[in-house]
Length: 180
Image 1 (cartoon, helix red, strand yellow):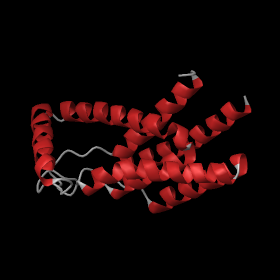
Image 2 (tube, rainbow, N blue to C red; image 1 turned 90 degrees about the vertical axis):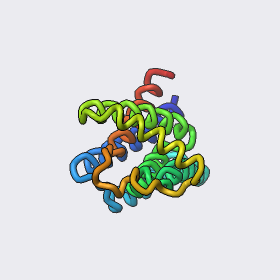
Image 3 (cartoon, rainbow, N blue to C red; image 1 turned 180 degrees about the horizontal axis):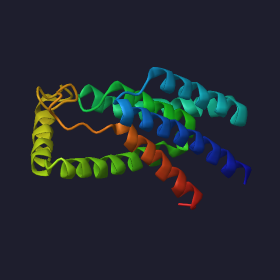
Image 4 (cartoon, helix red, strand yellow; image 1 turned 30 degrees about the vertical axis):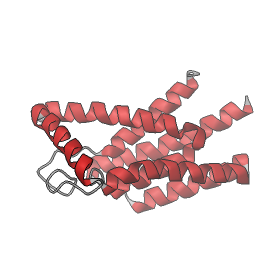
C-alpha cells in the first residue's frame, strides 16, 4: 500500500507540473524555463526523498524518455521547446512506470483538442489536408520542418500543447486512482 501512495504522490506532482505548464501555455503561449527547471528539480528531489537513489535514476530516465519522444516533434517543427521541457519535467515527477501512460493520454488529449480547435476555427477540412501534406513531407524529408506548416508560421492554427500535457498527466493519475 505504501508503494501505491508513493506512486500517487509522484503522479500528483506530475499533474501539478503539467497543470502549471498548461496555465502558462494557455495564457501566454509560452512555458517558462523557471517552471520546467524547478519541476525537474522537484521531481528528482521527491524521488530521492521517497525512494532513494534508484528512484532518482528512474526519474531521470523517465524525463529522458518523455522529453526524447517529444524532441522528434520539436525537430520536425511541430511544437515548441517549452512543450519538450514540460513533458520531460512531468516525466521526472511521475517516474518511468507512468511515462507510457502519460504519453498516450497526452496524444489522445492533444488529438481531441486539435480537432476541437479546427472545428471552432472553421478549418477542419484544411487541417486534415495539412496533416496529409505533413505526412507526405516528413515521409520524404525526414525531420526537416515543413516550409509553411510549422509552429513558426503565425498563420497556422497553434494549439497550446501544454494543455494536452496537463490533461494527459491528469488522465493518467485518474486511471491509476481507479486501478486501471
